[in-house]
Length: 357
View (cartoon, rainbow, N blue to C red):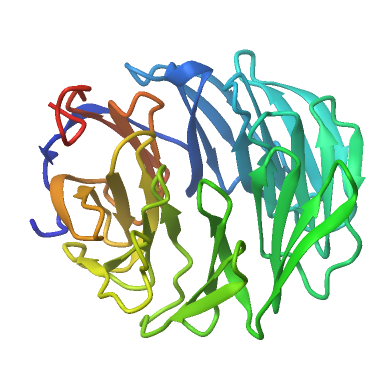
């Protein structure tokens, strides 16, 4: 692993383009079918760059008074939603960069929002309630009060929404207006991810552990020994492996067979400082990781959780978000100094057993 003073892209990551936004970049994602990269910063600026060249397409300032907190891109890639400290969620037209709907929730921060897999609903967590809106911004459903502030939300399927808060995860059927399942555990749950089939629920906990449940059997387990809070969680698209942060080492648990209980996880250790973001490719077993030291790595994982590095690059400062382009042929990262970097990734092929040439 090269030093963190800066190094050129290596392995299967290659030079692409770079740009800057005005403040700490906190979110990024590809829209318009991967033709453009959307970036948001803490000063509530939104920026759209042409995907191949980095040419600025449009820029909006102070879209949320006090600061931008979250971004969710609609499954069709043409619209997106943002939320912020001003108690509002906004729905945007990606091509024009114009806000089409404004959702007023009240006084307070709106930290979590997520489109349903079919794009019909937008879930917005506000304090102890979660609200669900149609694409036109009209409220469709809302939950009752949770026992504490909602810390994470995720859709298990197009009508079922999961919420995490202190001590429990709840699954709501937002169409039938009923609670499908409650999973309880005495602890502060700080993050959540669902397996692609929605059966496994994984939460990072304030006590430096990872707790998970299998919904089909009601069995739960806990993985301990993390030096820090494992806030970064990511399942691959098949649900075979779960990558977790919590230190400068990526811990990878395999759900193959009877795992991960009783198995030894894979350990991916080349970053010099703590992991700050994780993202699996849209196809195959490629994992991208960013760290506080500014390093970005791409790994090829095996089904048992072991992995090998395929490429590395330096983003300059703490990597706050990373995003694969929909075709997995490019990787974007934003950092704490407002840096935006896109690297090309060697063209994948369908004939290679590893999913790349």
